[in-house]
Image (cartoon, rainbow, N blue to C red; front, side, top):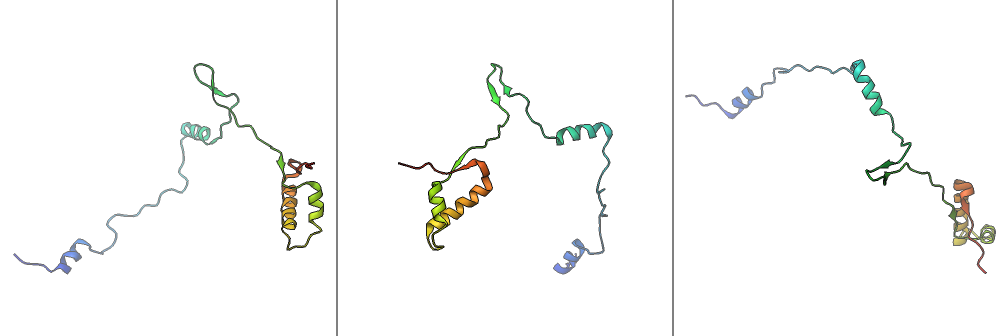
Length: 118
């Protein structure tokens, strides 16, 4: 019985003669059978609900989403807005007015000033 060194055993186990298994490149765009292609197209399309889904008793489980356009009330009145632009840049009211002006530009008609408190 001959003893082999550890290095010889490792060389036998992990012989670096080349690839033992050939590398096969997969097709980048495989062809899909026509009968399967129709199923794939159906799954890929988004589904929108025409009517709400109801349970056995007629109670709605899922209803279609309704887009919401809520009114945004700004934290200042229109008078404070006009006076705020006359303040110095170091004043906090100036930055609040600048931020409100940005919201007015973004939201358009959805933004509304706070009502005057008497």
